[in-house]
Image (cartoon, rainbow, N blue to C red; front, side, top):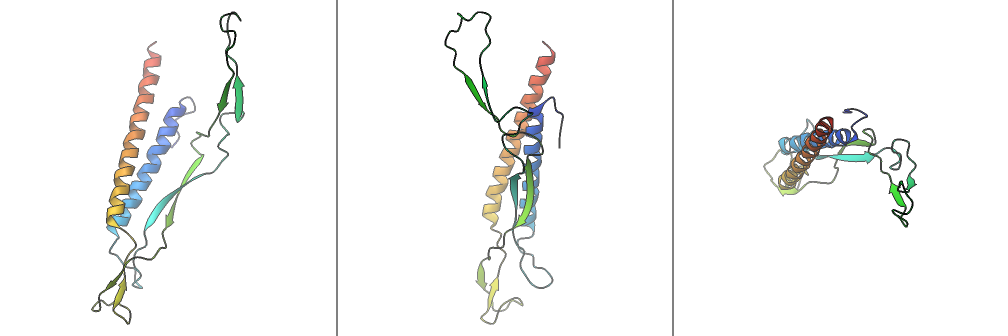
Amino acid sequence: MKVGDNFPGFNISAKGLSIQRKKMNIIAENIANSDVRNANGIPYKRKFLSVIQKQDPFQFQGIPPQSTLRLNTTNEAHISNSPDITLNQSGDDDSSLVANQQQDNSPGEVVYMPDSPYANEKGYVQMSNVNIIDEMVQMIAATRSYEANLTALNSSKQMAKDSLEI
């Protein structure tokens, strides 16, 4: 979701909100399907969100990756030895991050249940690789990240609103 080119803070927060929402949806799906098997009796495999940066991290609104700035003064004697400021730009563009859903193919826990129709010849059943406790911890972390992005968005909005009142 891109908000507008004039407010890059909005775009950064909006992208963070979008990624955390996707993450929470995947976690909720994992929790809901932790005891589900498909038609072949194969247990549900945990899904997770992989966030990838798809473009050069130093590409930012046409500014070179490393720029040196010098402080402009009205009189050179005011600040005679002002240091040069070096900027390292990072990619904050809305399209720089891509969130992909992936499947965790690690094996789940093996439980002895000889009466189960899914048991092997020794009586063991392969369970889902979803750990409810880990998923809940991930859900809390995603919720907190979502709230932090929402706070940053509201702060950016308030700054933009206050700047209009000057």
